[in-house]
Length: 156
Image (tube, rainbow, N blue to C red; front, side, top):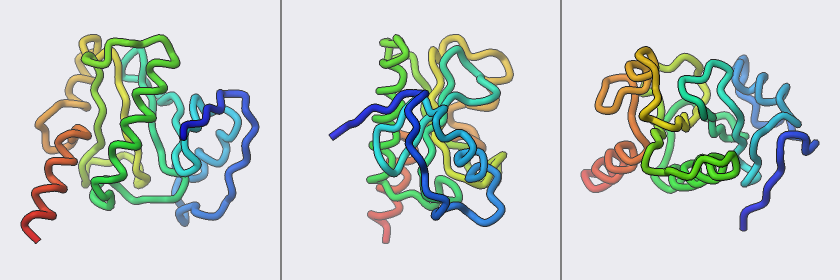
């Protein structure tokens, strides 16, 4: 069941689950009430402070998670669903022109898991095309990560 809390909804996040010394956890706590979306109790979504596209959102778990290597494949579809819903709520409907993915360690600017949701992907600027480049050493799409996790699980 999806619930929607928009930007001025005043829902309080508990301070438990904050990563020790994690700037993203502190910023997430400071941004309570400014979220673009709160579809699930364990995920929040807000605009990136340095957007790489006209629509650039971050889907962030409430509980501290280090990076995408700590994810399990069942986490990813829920994060993607939040990203798609936020785009649709913000009047972006061409879901074929979207890039969703994670920075791959050690190329993470912050040590708190976050899914980048960028749209339209066709309008990424030069630097954004580099930073969020598909098939690079530093960025992995949500689909690629699911495939990688399935391959790793099959091998173990």
